[in-house]
Length: 396
Figure 1: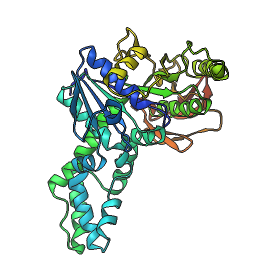
Figure 2: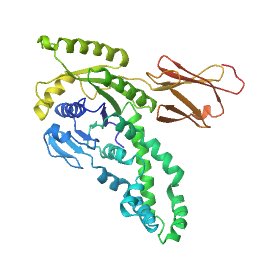
Figure 3: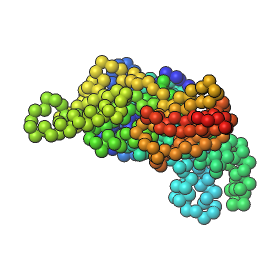
Figure 4: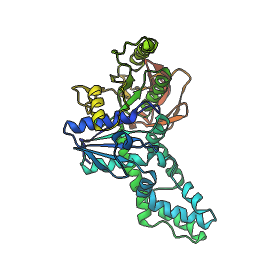
């Protein structure tokens, strides 16, 4: 797999201008000589409107060095899940389940949101692009998309054993219903799906490859939702390297009518600096016209990045780290910004710990050295959950 392709994912509350920011970033990279692709994972696509180009489910050229793609969910599901789904649909239909219902219930949970992620591995393998910029869906959908590799594997490992074992188990199950078991190609397609999901998960969690960028407006409600997004991205180990504040009223606006607006904007900008520090803050002005078409997107890109390279890693920071102490104990620190005492739950099994914050969950596989150790304590400290592992009977 090519190791030098960058992935930049823009997410944020609906209506903050993610699409324009993503398109402007990709176009800026293309103008700097990078082979760029911008893709939209939002089912309500607006990327084509922003670029003022007709887009489809495969990349098309929209400018020098720049391709664009609007992910088609059904096209992607057929591409990556189709063979095995056909077998499962036939099994359900023989039991009297209607065609439409059978097709719906055999869709892997989360796959509709996450089908777009599967393309990233393909692009990394191809070596055709220096950067893929992702115009992600609004935050709730994006969180479901990014947690798909964990959630999907949980579902299938419990209900459909992988690889050749699946063929041995499912074939006898299917015979009483007059259905042949999954053929090798169908079983292999499941294995490929999970291999791809694992690759994508690794790429998105690798700060040398990927960056998540949070798009906000200078409004308290938007800022609060973006804080929660930042917490959950840290929970799953995805590297956030910048915050983008879009549609700022320019200082040149002098009409007294906007004075109160400007005052609130200044207060909220201060709040953004406070809650997202040390992440760098990129800003873009409110344009007099709707941002659309290549020229206005170029102007937006210049306003955002100035002389800097949009592919730069703007912040390098670990989401979790492990430290060994002289007494043989270990401390695992996991960044969980904005989480308060009582909001996080921790569960331990032999080789992993599970963290829950609200309705979101993350499993962290532990290194082998921690397997014989017990969790002695867990506490929130300076925006991180600090978990101490030691041998039974060791005091903390």
